[in-house]
Length: 212
Image (cartoon, rainbow, N blue to C red; front, top):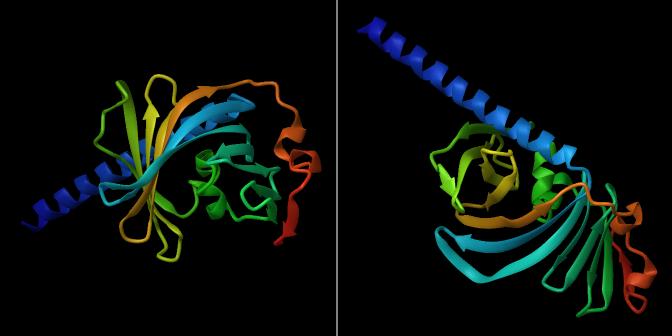
């Protein structure tokens, strides 16, 4: 009996290790694929859930990215990030808030940012979902290794044919989820570096509030 239990334990350990290795391989390929695309444009739909129930209205938006830099438009709010400083323009208040966000704060805004720091603080495995939006996919599940991390769980749907991210879901707290579905994605765009920085002409009447 002891030998049988030992054998089963060994088989389980090998299976778990292989699963994690396969998941990491998919994540590495997805991150490399994104990096190779240079500056990209993407359109997305964002939804919030409590458990399986959607809360509030779906939000559509678009984003331009180059590495960690991005310009985001969603719900009438425009956000610029140049790799260090973030500017958020809220037309309703005629304000531009200036901050220096953390990686986890950026993750709630830019789903592709996760491809820069998934290697630290998360365990991962291959999930069970095989199809999404009519495409063959790899589902990757990630779980935070420390309780104090803001993002507790992440689920990614990655297109098997080209390693492109189709959807990413985040869980914060016990049962609060946010999903971001990528509706379109175009790489190798010719965009000036100035696109990722706020300039006064972008909102000439706005009050600048420096929160750094």
